[in-house]
Image (cartoon, rainbow, N blue to C red):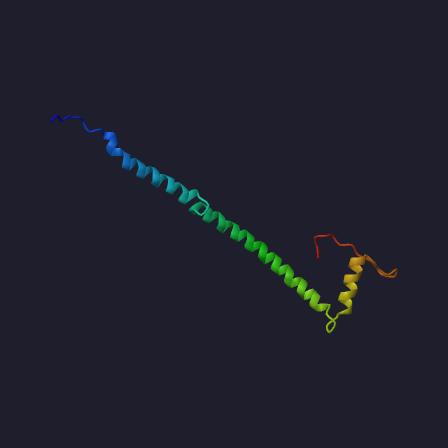
Length: 107
């Protein structure tokens, strides 16, 4: 029976730890930069704030429009409001009326 003496290599002992480090680096990178990672959470929060501001503006506009429509219902019809809206939409005025033109930014 013969035996062979050989020296243990250091590379054999480093294979498993290096694979573990590679897996941890891979999953760590994607945990931060991935589609559902930490970085995307901050982007989604910023987008949520922006969309909430747009939603609030649209909601305020809707409330204003609903109020104006309520004024035009049959039971609460205000003749002055209806006359003003019709003149503005049709760009009409009577010959004996004086029209004052205001800048567009002052309402």
